Amino acid sequence: MLNDKRYLVLEDGTVYEGYKLGADGESAGEIVFNTSMTGVQEIITDNSYTDQIITFSYPLIGSAGFNTEDSESLLPTARGVVVREAIEHPSNFRSTENLDGFLKSNDIVGISGVDTRSITKKIRNSGVMKAEITDSSDHAKTVEAIRAMEFARDQVKRVSTNTPYISTGTGPRVALLDFGKKENIVRSLNQRGCDVTVLPHDSTSERILQLKPDGVMLSNGPGDPADVTEAVETIRNLIGQIPIFGICLGHQLIALAGGASSYKMKFGHRGANQPVKNLSTNKVEITTQNHGYAIDEDSLKDTDFEITHIAINDNSVEGIRHRSEPVFSVQYHPEAAAGPHDASYLFDQFIEMMKAGGGQSNA
Ligand SMILES: NC(=O)CC[C@H](N)C(=O)O
Image (cartoon, rainbow, N blue to C red; front, top):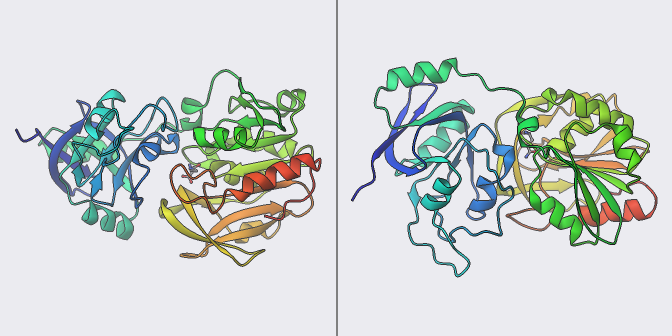
């Protein structure tokens, strides 16, 4: 039996007719696209997508199925999923659910059977915009509601851990500020022996230093970095006190703490084949990315930070380091999950920095 009809309605009035996928109900958010061909469970459960509807540009989604080990968070906060074809019967011994079942289990609304290539091209040409997945055929009313919609700007608070906890290890002690972390950041540190204390996003610099960590990890996370003002102040107080490594939102917050500024990109970088040039080695790393904001290159000029990595496709800033203090960060995701492991060396660099008591990174 064909699934029930469902619609994707965009802020500009465009309507795509498809079929119901996932949870009942309707959901609105900022529509973005991700070009990855794998790692669907990791992408859907990455809390950087809070308040966003994820369109997969690759047509066949869900062939590897879903399981209980590969989620990047246990409470996904994406507002919706848009696919061309939802695979009903995954081919993977590890799979315990198909896409429809996984979305239902996580109360995520989805739509299938729509032209995701056209949607991707529209977002690329017009920029990200608001959208709604709905069963209602009163599209004029939906467009009106979308246009009136505003997002609460407390996304980080909504996804950060509320209580500190420790993921134990016998190596360097890392205080991880959780802005909506991907679990594979913790795993990547644990795999290298680190003892990781995960802290709420609004932990103060005094509280962090009281734990006497060897280093501070600043995680990825959703929303506009300019809204995370409390953490920017905390990071400003930590620079010069302790080695710091930032990923994605963590990278943006370090730059803001250093006096630089961020801007919203037209459609961001979201995929697992984003080429980045390491300016120290002149090597190109293929990276996993998921960001809609970036650091303004010119705004770094009057700060103590220098650029270490740039995106090959658009020359945007992909990495920075402090000129004299043990502080560095990247806009992309060295923890991959999913995607290439070209950039995993950065975790090793962070550990060497902590072991050296905070020497300079050669990111
Ligand atoms: N993955 C992230 O940490 C994203 C950072 C920020 N929310 C952005 O969209 O640019």
